[in-house]
Image 1 (cartoon, helix red, strand yellow):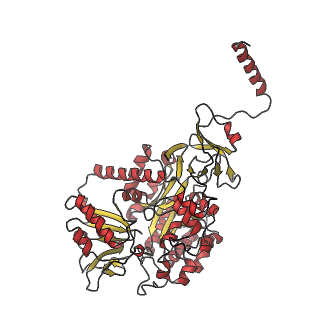
Image 2: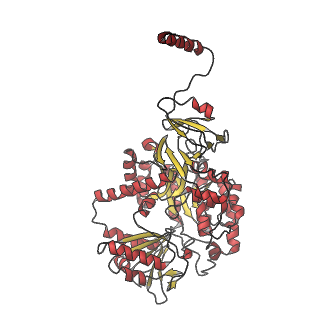
Length: 572
C-alpha cells in the first residue's frame, strides 16, 4: 500500500474510533516515574507502581500500564527499577539558616571530648585573622567519652580554650542551641566579669570562686550574641545580605540533597524573611519554606499583618506562624520542670520567656490569623503552654480548627498528655532527639518521670493528637533516614532501646514525616501524600525502608528529590 493511502486509512480508523466510547488518551505528562513501589500515604490508594505529573502537580497515580498512557514525546521518564517512592519528606521543625550556618562554622557534633574541641579551635585560630571571631556549634558534654577537667556542673571551664585562642573571640554553641561557651576574649568583648548578674531566664555559670566559667545558659547567651553583633556593626547592608544569601543557598542544597521538599522553619526575624522573599521571588529557592516569625514583641505587633503570606512565589514561601520559647533544653538543664532535676536538686530549669509575654503572643496570633508555636520541653513548660492555648481558645469559640503547636513536647506530666488530643494541639516532635538524649534523660528526670512522659508518641497519638516529625536541625543532622530509623526503633548505639512501647510503626513514622507534618501547617490539601491534584513533591529512596530489616534502614540513600515536578537532586 502506498504511504499516502496508509495515512488516509489511519486517519479514517482514528476518526471511526473517536466515537467508539473508549477513554480518550490523556494529555502527556511532563514527568513520569514508573516500575517502582510507591507508598502514597493516601488511604484510598495506599500503593502504586507509577505516577505522572504535569507541571508542578500530580495528575495520576496507578499501575505501570495506566501511567504509560501519560508518556508523550517530551515526557521525562524515570525508570525506578523497583525503588521506593514516598511523598517528599517535610522537615517539621528545623532552623533553616542554622543549617546553612553550620556549613560555614566549626562543626562540633562529632567531637569526643573537650580536648578535641580545643584542638579544633586551635587549628581555626591558625587560619584566622587577628581579632576575627571564631564560631562553632554542636558540642554536648553529656555525650563525650570523658568528662572535662576541671568542670562545673559537668561543663568545661574556659582556661584551655582561652589559652588556645588568646587574641580571637570564640563562641561555641551547645548542640541543643540553648547554651553557648565563650573564651576570655569573647567574655571581655561582652563585658562579662564576676559581677555580671544572671539575666531573667538565663544563667552565667560561675565556679566556686565566683568567676565565670565560660558557659552561658539560655538567655545569658545573648550577652555573647550582642558582643558579636557589635563587632559586625560596621558591615554594610549589602555585605550582610550577601552573607545571608550564601547561608540560604547552602541550607537549600543540604536539605534538598537529603530528600526534603518542604521545611518548617522554627523561628526567624523579619529582616531574614525579607531576604527569603527575595531569593524565593528570583526562583532560587528549591525547597518550600513554611516560616514561624520570632522577633521582638514590638515588631510583631506592628508587622505581623503585612507579612502573612501563604504559598507565595510559586508556593515556595509561607509565613503564617509565631514562634515563642518558654523554656530551654534538658541537656543543658534549662528545661522548665514541675519538680527539680534528679541530678541537680537545686534547680527546676528556666522559664526563658515570661508567661504573660507568651499570652500576648497568643492574642497577636488570634488577631492576625497566625498559628502559635511554643517551644516547650519540660513538664512545667508544656503545662503552661497548654494552659495558654486553652485560655486563648475559649476567647474564640467560633474558631474550631486552630492547630496551635507545641514544639518538642518532650517531657510531659501524665495528666497533661490527654489534653493534646482534647484541645487539638499539634505535638511537633523530633524522633532522633529521643535516641540522642536518652543517655541522659533518666539522670535528669529519674526513671519514673522518664517512663511516664518522655517522648510519649504512642500515648499522644492515643489521645487523638497529631504528632509531626523533624530533626530540629542543626541540633541534629537534617537527614530524614536517620530520624526515621530512630522513630521506628528508639535504639541507642549500645543496642538498648529507650521505652520501646512508645516507638512508631513504619507507616506511622512515614505519615508523621509527610501527611502529619503537612497537616500541622494547614497544608494537607496540597502536600503529604501522593494523590492526583497534589503537588508533585517526591522523594525516591535506594531501599524500601518500609520492609527491609531495621538495621538496613540506615544504609538507604536518597536517589531523587523532586519538587514541583522538577528533579532538584539526583544521586550519582
